[in-house]
Each structure stands twice: as C-alpha cells, then as structure tokens.
Amino acid sequence: MVRQHVNPLSRLYQLPRPLPSLPELFADPALPLHLDIGCARGRFLIAMAAHNPERNHLGVEIRRPLVAAAEAERLSLGATNLHFLFCNATINLETWLAALPPGRLALVTLQFPDPWFKSRHHKRRVLQPPLLRALAAALAPGRELFLQSDVLGLIEPMVELVEASGCFHRPLEDARPWRGSNPLPIPTERERLVLDQGLPIYRVLYQRNDAPPPPLAPDAADNPADADPR
Ligand SMILES: C[S@@+](CC[C@H](N)C(=O)[O-])C[C@H]1O[C@@H](n2cnc3c(N)ncnc32)[C@H](O)[C@@H]1O
Image (cartoon, rainbow, N blue to C red):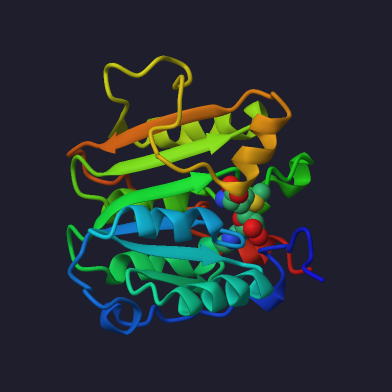
C-alpha cells in the first residue's frame, strides 16, 4: 500500500543524495529538460515525454513505491527521454539544480502540491524560499515555471513567494489572478480528478526574467528539518 502523505521533514528523508549524471538518465543528455516536482505515479510526465521527444523529462517524488512504479513503466515503454528519481525536493533539489549545465532547464512544473492545511504543518509544503531561489538560479531568462492547484490557500502564498523574488513575470496576455487554461497539452492525475468534480483550478505560468536570484534570509537558509524531527 502506498501512503497518502509522507512528512518531508522526518529524519527518513533528510539524507543528501547526488543527482546521477545526465548521460546516466537520458539517451541525449543535451536536450532541454522539463522537471516535474512531486510527479506521483508519473503518468503526466510519461505522456509529456511521448508528446515532446525534443525534451528530456525528469520526475522527482518523495514516495518511493510511486517512483518504482513510474520507473517500471518507463522501462517497459523504452522511453529514453524520461526518468523518475526518488527525491525530497526541499532537501535534495537545491544541489541537483545547481549541478545542471547552465541553460539546460527549460520548464519546471509544480502541480497540485500537498496542501498541508494546518498552519503548524506549512513548513512541510514543498515550495520554500531556498527551493524557489534554486529554481530562479537554474532557470535562464525566458524559461518557464508552471504552478497549479485546486487549493487557493496554498497557491496564493506560492504566488506571493515567486513574485516577491522579483525573478519571474507572467506573460502579458495571461488572465489575472489565474490563467483561464492549462498551457500544457496533458492534464495531471490530480487535475483530472478535480476537473471531473467540476471544481476550480488556479494556474499561473511564469517566465524567468533576468533579475539575479534574491539573497536568502538567514532563517530561510536554515535546514527545515531542524524544525520538525518527527
Ligand atoms: C497531491 S500530489 C500531486 C501529484 C501530481 N503532481 C498531480 O498533479 O497529479 C503531490 C505529490 O507531491 C509529492 N511530494 C510531496 N512533498 C514532496 C517533496 N518534498 N519532494 C518530492 N515530492 C513530494 C507527494 O508525495 C505527491 O505524490
């Protein structure tokens, strides 16, 4: 059985992990990279990789059984522009993003992240200042960050964080506060469920501008694991 949620701040998920080299992950490591954070069972990214052979696709996920299932499907399909890795995004992604060749990252998607509704659990949410800063450092001007959620109280602080960085802008033609539609050709699993229920989805597409990544506030640079050792 796959657990519904895991606590990313638990000691189990604090180990540093190196990013395998891109040639170990993809047949053509020079292709632009789409990173999907919290990819779950990976069906969205499997379809995206088939749809867009001119890009590599990396799905990262904290629930190991889902990574194993996604990798098994990828292998059975023989997809060579796709890979899934076990990763705690709040702990591992900063170093992984810094290890990418400059300009390689084309698109980052963060779709329907776990809301962690209780305020004492907000620190478990995936988009924290150090990760946002690492994304800003790894994305070249013009490259994209796409966020979507069905939880207004989750996406609003994400938008606040992204916009406070000064590193991203929205395409001028986009409706505000939320895009009218998904710019990507394939819905995620969670997105399908929400659409089937006729519930609203809040979406924002950002483009990286040329502002330098903001300095980290000293408290944001602390390891969040220090705060919640369970
Ligand atoms: C609600 S699901 C959405 C899955 C998928 N993006 C979709 O839209 O269908 C959120 C996913 O993010 C994963 N996740 C949560 N925190 C994470 C973290 N710190 N690092 C990596 N994955 C994480 C969860 O395990 C879960 O699979």
